[in-house]
Length: 392
Image (cartoon, rainbow, N blue to C red; front, side, top):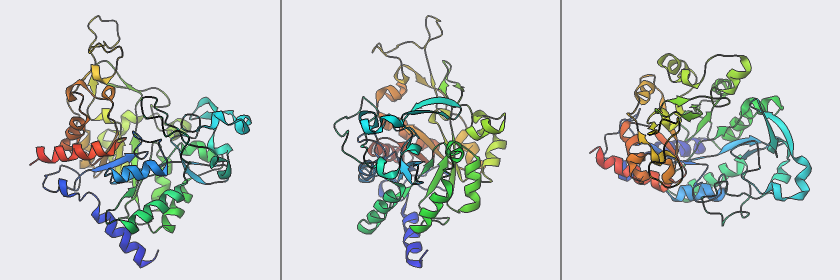
């Protein structure tokens, strides 16, 4: 990497988390800096996810980082999709020329039928167009945008650095690495190669690499100095607010393959956090590990009640629980905490937030979370400003 590229990227890294509206606060983050707002799949609340347009919108709305989930094509090109499956986020099902590519594979141990990116070349992927998978969100942009490669995303961010005084980081996730490895399509070395090409393969670069699995992060630790984040999942929330676990959301899939008895619930214990700190720089827990929600079951039927009588049962019918000590435990282990996923829809918000998503962000920021993954980055920035005022 050239000295110029390294200095530019270092300057970018130093500028992150230095928003003018957050400087006065006494942040409880690991390093005392303002927490990050990460554009989850771009500004996916507004535009079809994992498109250059969604990433640009996230930047315009104030995101500090953008998050591309990465899968690999048949010809070994990294592209941005949430899953190896293309069905829900592209128009592939409506394209008769690709009908024969529909197949069934084992995806993290579960028989899954659909269109897999690994059966398409990049040239074929480029014929597809992105769609909004959430039917409650705007559908008017369906069919307009291409599926970008990781290289194209890095090029776009490079142009942003050249034309703007404000920096933006990149936060790729390796999706289903064991699945890809079994297909002969390992992703890790290609990610590192591209980061090196764009002058981003060093410790303080504005880069995080994340994964729900552990073995590939440990491999990456030997290949790159950029910061790594261990994601921590769960299946659902029980009536009392405790987390429930069911495959494949019970443990890292590489644990399932190797017969490791541990699960995600074990990874948030102090001893496991200390082990994670040996190969990673942070954890990315589902937000319910930090603040959960408790349901009402007045008729004792074992099901959550529709408290607000809107015809559906969701988090808006539930009360938030007392925050856990996970942030403190992680910080003691020297780990950052980047929680996911924050959304604006009222059904995703505990009743205590009174339908205002800024209140949820503010609570997490005041608790000391180091960053949040947000579908609506502008709301995340507003919540950070709210938290800053509360910490004066």
